[in-house]
Image (cartoon, rainbow, N blue to C red):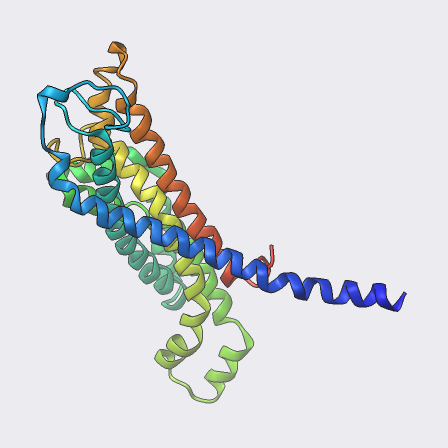
Length: 287
């Protein structure tokens, strides 16, 4: 009996470290893969626009694993370059949107009832407008292109994270250690930096990472509709939009491989976000 009790007591401890190591290794591998896609894609960007009409409309083969398009451009090169561009757009837009969420969420929780009501009203307003419609309007108003898409995504993805940060700051504001710090005469700025920011930072980082796949998918969506990146750029949305005219001719590889690659990148981002959430959340770190 004593031996059985000892095994039960020590079993979770022996599994704890391998679980965290496996999660950390998965996160590192996913980040390395995404970074490699960005670096390789930027290096292949000039080759992604080169035409070779002598090798057009080639089905997937050893020389061209993803085939070629109607202008003889290698679809594997174009897909990697497009994924790199999508990741860069998503990175910039998600970072800007998360900063907006941090500022508005903190202001709503710390600056009084009027500011809180104004921020909540703004969140409800943004969430009440169809997402794609708002993205298209902002991107079109800014002249489309790289900056139009980036600004449009950045200005439309902050409401959900703002609610999370507001709730975390409100919970931290009413905690015991913050009350003790106030009673000791600690300034508001010092309390925010020393106590509230470390409490909010894990949720902020996880929300930022989980915002990436939404930003990438919405960038591809509005580019596919013609309101995003310019046609001469090897973007995934452009590739998928061009492929629609050739699917009826049996050129299925023009849409299948880029679409699967986009889904794969989104899933890799989900692995990073879920892994970091398990690492920073003590309730789920051993799952």
